[in-house]
Image (cartoon, rainbow, N blue to C red; front, side, top):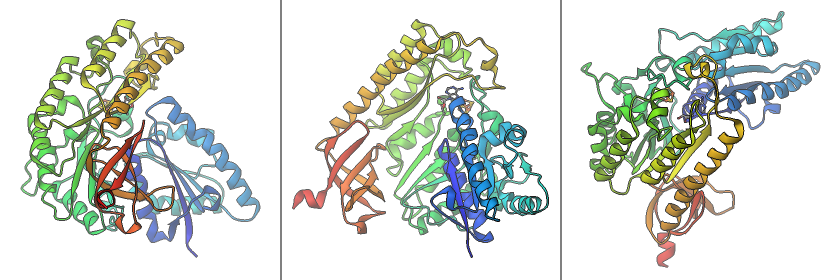
Length: 452
Ligand code: 5AD
Ligand code: SF4
C-alpha cells in the first residue's frame, strides 16, 4: 500500500521548490502526497529561519505532531517526523534536544540523501531511538542526484538556478543557512526547462537567493550571466513567460536591464529589495550601495521597459534607525512607486553581525513605522490595481478559483486575476479585460466574453 507523505512548507519560493523535489525523491520509495498530517506516515516541515516568528512556528507545529505520533504509536503504528530547511540547518542539534521525537533533521543541501535517511530512521525507531541529523554542505550537488521526473509542476513552475549568498547583509541568516553562492550549469537548467515545458509549464520563474548573481558555466565552460541565461531560455519553444527572483541591486548590470527591453518573454515585473532608503542604515546593513544608486537602477529599468512593475522588501527598526532614517525610506518608496511590496519589523537573528548591536528601536516604534510604511505601500498597490481597470491583459490561467467556473491567473505584472472561464482554459494565456481592481487582486472577463 502507498505510504502517505505530508510536507508543510514555510518561507520563500526556494522552499516551495525544495519541497516539490523532496516529494520527487520519496516517490520511488512508495510515498504519495496526502492533504493532512493526521493521515500521513511521514511529515516533513520544510522550515524558514529568516525572522524569529518564522522559526518559532516550527516548535509549536512540532508539539502538535508529537500528539499525532503518540496516538499512532498507541495504535501500534508509527509516523516519521522530519524537519528540513533553514531552521534545521541553523539549529539541528537544538531541535534534536528540544524535540527528541523528531526522527530526521536535514538541511537544504542534503535532501537528495532522503531515502537513506528514511531507511536509517525507520530502522532506528524499530530498535530503540536515535534520530538522523544531516546538515552537511556535501561536495556533491543535490541537483545531480534528483530524479528526472521534474515535469508536471503546473503551468507556472519554479526552477532553481542559483543558491546561497555571499553578500552577508548584517541582519540576514541566509549566508549561514544556505551557504556560499553556487550556480547550476546552463545545460542542466535548459534541460530542466524543456522538461517543464513538455509537462505543461508556460511560465518559468528562475529562483535563487541572489538570482542575478548567477554565473553558471555554459557548455564551453564560459561563465554565463543571468541576462545570457534568460536570452537562451527565451528560445525554448512553448515557453511563453520568464521571471526571476530574488535580486540584489549590486548585481543589476546593464545587460540584465537591457533584457527587460529586448526579450518579450521576460515579464515586466521585478522584485528588487532595497531594505531601507537611508544611506546610513544601508551602510550598517552592509548593502554596499546608496539609495541614489538604487533609484538610478530603477530609472534605467523604466527606460528599458516603461511599464515595468516594481516590488521590494523593507526592514523597519534596524538598530540605530532614527525618525530621519525612516523618513528617507518613505521618500524612496514615494520616488519608486511600487506595485507590491513586503515589509518587516527587524528581528535579531542569532549569529548575524547585527545581532551584536543593541536593538535600539522600541517595539511600539517599530510597529508604528511598519504601519506607516504599509499604508503608503498599500496605497500604491491599490492605485496601480485600480488603474488597470479597462485594460486588456494576457493572463496565464494557472489554477482553479474557489468558486465553480472561476479560474485564477497572473497578469504580466504579477497581479492575481480572477476570471469566469471554462476549465479547458487552464494552463493557457488568455486575453482578459480587467473590470475591477481590488487591494490584492484584479477581476476580469475573457475578452471573447467581453466581445460577445
Ligand atoms: N529581520 C527582519 N527582516 C528580515 N529579512 C531578512 N532578515 C531579516 C531580519 N533579521 C527580510 C528582508 C529580506 C526578506 C526575505 O526578509 O527584507 O529581503
Ligand atoms: Fe540575505 Fe542580503 Fe544575501 Fe539577500 S543579499 S540573502 S538579504 S545576505
